[in-house]
Amino acid sequence: MTPEILIAIVSAFAGGFITFLFRVLSDKRKEKREDRLEAKKLQRDAFQNRPEMQIVNYKDYVCRPGYGIKQKCDIDLFVARISQVSLEGKRKDQIVRAHFCGDDLNPENWCCVIYTLKNAGKTDISRLDIICHFQQTTCIFPSQETKQWADGGLLNYAHCYDRKVRVDETITLKLCYHKDHIVPSAFSAAISIGMVDDNGRHWTQPLFAPQDKAYDSRPISSKEYHDELNTDTAEECFKKPWLW
Figure 1 (cartoon, helix red, strand yellow):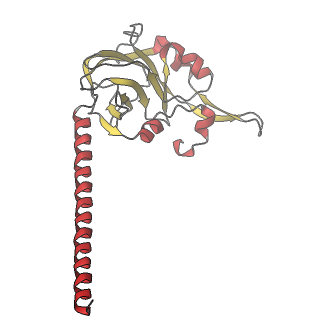
Figure 2 (figure 1 turned 180 degrees about the vertical axis):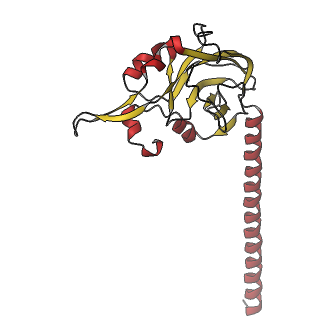
C-alpha cells in the first residue's frame, strides 16, 4: 500500500469520524433543547391546572365580638398572641414553655371572620394546610382545644385539613381572635393556604386574614412546603434563635 493510499484512507476515516461526532453532539443538543421545552410545557400546564382557593363568601365579625363564634366550620382556629417564651427547670432538665395571656383564651372575648373557600382550580387537592407566618408574635390552635394547647406551652404554626378538596368543592374556614389583639396583614399575609394536589405538587397561596383578600397560588418545592409547616413544640422552637 502506497503512502498516498494510506493517507487517503486515514483522511477519509478522520473525516467520517468528525462528521459522526458533530452529528452526535448536534443530536444531543437537540434532545436537551427538546427536554427543556417539554419541561417548560409541563410547568406551564401544571400552573394552568393548579389548585386555587377562591373566596366565594366572607363574613366579617371583627367588630362584633361573640358573633359567629359558635358557627360550625370545616376548619376552626384561634390565632393566639404569644406573651413570652421561657426556660423552666434545672439546667439539665430545662424545658421551654410558651406563655399566653389568660384573658386571650376566653372565648367570650373573641371575634372572628369566616371564609367560604372554593377550589376554583382544575386539580383536586389531596391535602390542605393553614399556615401562620408571624411566628414571633402569634401561633394557631384548634379553637375548641385552645386552652389545653396553651396550657401545654405549645407553639403551633400549622393546621392540617386532611381531606380531599375536589374541584369546585367548598370548605369553610373560621379564624378567631381576641377582640383587642387582632393581627393585621398590612404588608404581608399573616396566613397562607398550603396545598398538595393529586399529582403530588406543592402550592402556597397567601391569605391576608382577617381581610377579604387572597393572592394567586404559586408552586413551591416539597422542602419549602414542609419548612413552612413548622409545627414545632416550644422545646424545638427555642432551638431556632432566628424565630426570636
